[in-house]
Amino acid sequence: MIEIKQWGETILNVWKNGLFGMNVGQIIAALAIFLTSLFLRKSISKVVVNRLKKWTQKTETQVDDQIIDALKSPLNLLPVILGIFFAREVAGFDGTFLARLIRSLVVFGLFWCLFNVVMPLSYLFKKLEGVFDRSLLDWFFNAVRAGIALIGAATVLEIWGIRVGPIIAGLGLFGVAVALGAQDLFKNLISGTLLLAERRFKVEDWILVPGVVEGTVEKIGFRSTRIRRFDKAPVFVPNTLLSDNILINFSAMTFRRISWLVGLEYRTTIPQLKAIQKKVDSWLRAHKDFVNPPEAPLFVRIEKFSDSSIDMMVYCFTRSTKWGLWLEKKEELVMAIKEIVEEEGAGFAFPSQSIYVEALPWQEGPLSCSPQEEKKDQQR
Image (cartoon, rainbow, N blue to C red; front, side):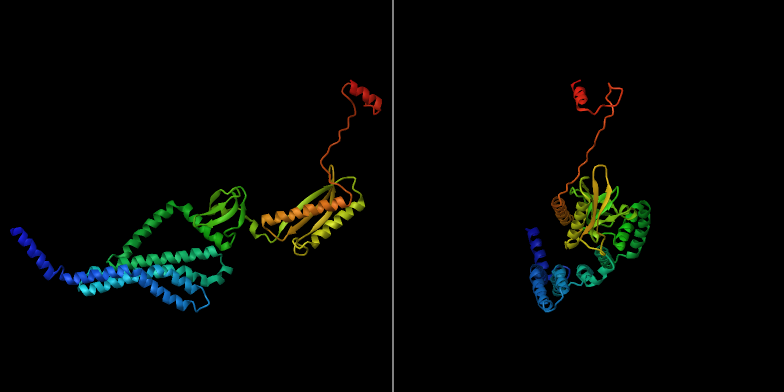
């Protein structure tokens, strides 16, 4: 009974005098304020965002709308900070822990806003895309975001009395040790930066590095570049291989070439050859999808006598560099050439060989060309 009485007296003492200098009423009020702010944080931030959006909708630019969207998540933290602050004031708690916690949350919220706003603000620098590749600009703004995150973390550590200087010095020594063992990593980082600065290629370009890879660029990373081959297999290529080797960027072509040798039969006459050459040349010059001089060379010429044909060279360029459209234009040209050759009564040559036999193994002299002797030889 005595223990129960002592326990009851303790409960009454806590109710009257509270804990840490706060009575129970203050504690309950502080908890109610904090829980209310925690429960209403999304509703409050939504009201603030909607009010800000009404102002931004009056402007023509889309950047301010993107900035408001980026601030949605950090604004959810604002009611929580206010709830902790007012709960502390109501409770009358003067401890340094809550003071540091509130300051840390304020700093965290500010740097979170800055971190999220960097990318929307980067689109204000679109004019720089004429000088620098967009991927290089993305790298730069990602580095800015990383710098903001580091400064914010250092500020929070200083609030809690943790000195950042010795940590940075230690990291510097650690960085030197890592750099000695990660030379290839840094070479690839530098190579990736040079690739973007030189604008050798960009995402979605079709490139070829002889002996390394051929395909479409999907992502340019800090250390490697992901290239999708034409069989749809991804290839991760270290940036040094792309910067130190010869690289062909097919997507940078102004026009796309067609170079053929069309073999005509030897029985084709001179008037037929001239007519075929002239009609093919006129067809190419009249077609809007093929490039005319002086923009690009265009040649249709009777070039040479081959083993079994008279060769006509067709050398031209299509305006489209995309593979599918280029194949369509090649197909049109094939059909046109065939139609022209058939209109002129000529034909296409095909490889053939003629064998001349001077003597059979069982004959000492030359083979007779008379039909009777050939018939005898066949009967043998």
